[in-house]
Structure formats: C-alpha cells, structure tokens
Amino acid sequence: MHVKVLDGRVVERAKARGIDVLVYAPHFTRLPTIRKRAERHSDDELLVVPAREIFTGNWQNRRHLLAVGISEPIPDFISFEGALSALAEQDAALCVPHPTLLNVSLGRPEIRAYADHIDAVESYNVKSPPHVNKRAKRIIEEAGLPSFGSSYAHLRGSVGGAWTEFEADVESEADLVDALVSNADRDVVHRAGPRHRFWNAAEFAHLGYENSWGKIDRLFLSGTEPTHPDHIAYDGRFDDVAVY
Image 1 (cartoon, rainbow, N blue to C red):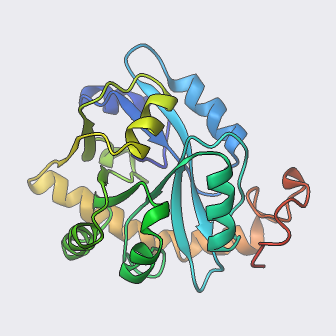
Image 2: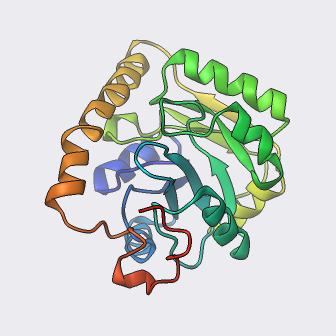
C-alpha cells in the first residue's frame, strides 16, 4: 500500500521481496483502466488490488486520499467533502497517504477533524523524508488511528521498501478493505541501510519531475485529464463538487 508503477518487473520485484498483496493506485488514471491492469498482473503468488489516490481541491490546496475498495469511478479535483461523501456511499476504505508532506497532504488539523471518517493513516512512506515520517507517527498516536506503511513507489526500485503486515489473511480486495475498516492487527515494516536510503532520496527527488515537467505536460500538453470531473466519463455527476 501502495505503488504508482506496475509491469512485469514490478511484479517480479514484489515477489522477490515477499510481498503478497500490492495496492496499485496510479495518478490521473481512471478506475476501469486500473482494474484491468491489476487483473492482468495478478496471479497465485501476488494479488494486485486496484485503488485510487484522489486529488481533492485545486493545485494550490491539494489533499490526497487513498481509496481502496471503490466500485464506481471518482474523479480528481473535487472538494474534500465531495470525495468523502462519494467514498462513504461506496463503503470504501479511506486512507491518508503521506500526511503533512509538502502541500499535497492532510495535516494534523484535518486528520483530527475527520478522524471518524478515516480508516488508516500512513506512518511510513519511502518517499517522505525521515522527519516527515516521524511527524506522521506522532499525529497518528494523537488521533488514535490505525496506521499503514507504503513504498509509494513511483520508481521500480522502491517496490518492497516498506509494507504493512496484517494478522488477518488477505486473499482478495474485499479482505483488504475489511482489514482496513475493522482495524485489524498489523505491523508497519520498512527496510534500512544505504540502499534503502538511496531509494528514499531518489523518490523524494522524483517530486521535482512531478511538479515541473510532469505538471506542465498534464496541464498544457495532454488535454483534459482522464480523471477531471468535466471528462465525459463522469457524465456531469460531480459538477456540484468540482473545484475547477
């Protein structure tokens, strides 16, 4: 929980590192596409669970939510409250990725205010600097919420750098949702050492690409985002909560 990249090499790396379940939630990709890719890369050794990291708010005030177990597409660039309402209607597990990381995350006030809606908060993220992960753990303890760990891999080499070990068996998407919403016992584990620190630095540096050329490509060169609420695929269902 969770990765942004998925191909044969990612699957091989996950298996080599003992991962049984991989949550796949790429940016700006519609749910049907994510589901097809997840099914194509799942087998008896590795279950790939489709999910969405939803961008709520506009570019200046982004708040990301990781949704696991959604059955109907939810776009990006809708209000935070609109996303919460859509997720509640689908009984999805609502997780908070990389809390307090730059301007793309929920902070301490939001996590406290919406604690009753949140199923888990990320306590360790390979992309986050050490001080951000430490701060996340303090926030989770203060809020009394369950935690999870993630490689948040945008780069293949980060896959398996951090993971969540559940006491309960997770053999399907429904099992994972149940483990999250029921606060099943778990441990958050991550690797250490020079190689792990290298991938930590590489992932953080990747933010530079995401927020420069990657953003320019999305905003000016690629047309309407597939997950923009104005996209024809959403048939105007989110017009009342769209932020731009």
